Length: 399
Image (cartoon, rainbow, N blue to C red; front, side):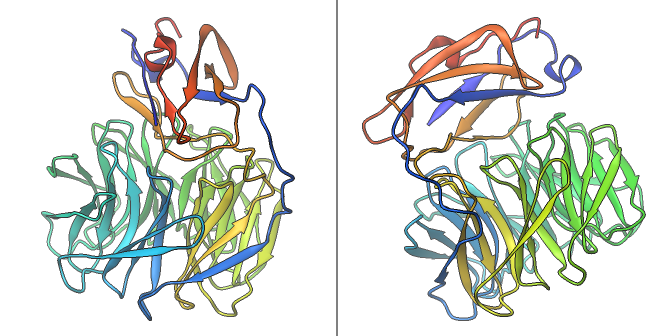
């Protein structure tokens, strides 16, 4: 995998809205892209395990939680599943995310713990200080820590890779926070389902809240347009980092829930009640795709390393793959996390259909920063090796 470290004397987010490391093609073979919406389903080995959260791992596989089964699952893009049993029985694993340490971190809703599992299946668990807090959503923060919501504790928690937990109270009482995501502004954004708000918390713990008028928000994710996108109440919403909210209607009764940015530059979401997967463009155009298995209850969703969207089907006990319209051999590796002074940005290992050399550049709001370019070379097994000083430590002084 490739690591990029920002070297600058000036706080990055006081100067730019968003800086991204862009990996651009220099050519290479591709195959025709399948149309979007084609679904393939894979049954989870443990019966009635109720898969919930899902994320693309740093090892090129998909990782998911089994809420009832008490396991963490690993699935290859070919559909081969391996399961790892969590030490605490009946832990109720829920959301899952990739940490800055290259491990998978997950919430244990029923056990009141945060769990960590390595890609080889070794576990560690950490108890949340507030009793019965029901940790729910989890996301990697720009500060190298994991951030999580406490559904019943009405707090936002932060856990370091070493397992030290700090909790921050949400100003609105009984807010019921659900999901959380790192924003392009260096903050964490979360949904408050019980009070119909979107919250923002800085890495120092300062919380700001924005009221919604039409939605009970659930899932949230950073979008391809520099905004946050959220689901809830038959709508897909967009909130800018300044707090401006726009909402778009979906089919009535479909119940949008999980949200993820797709490899096609659109936002994708699960519709748990409508048994569909939705796609919304940055301009707000919504398309919905039916799932073959009836009443499957799609829940979590994530962009996979193969150019597809992967999602969990809780009632059907399946993990499914849906084509995005992007060719499996014409995909660019995506970085995990957002830029932060002194911290690495990492893209997961995978085999991409690209030429041997890939150009690298830093961009500010989509425009290339002059002189901030480099290149990386693909290793024989397909992962990216660090070959350029500019790629490894791009100098953003004055950005």
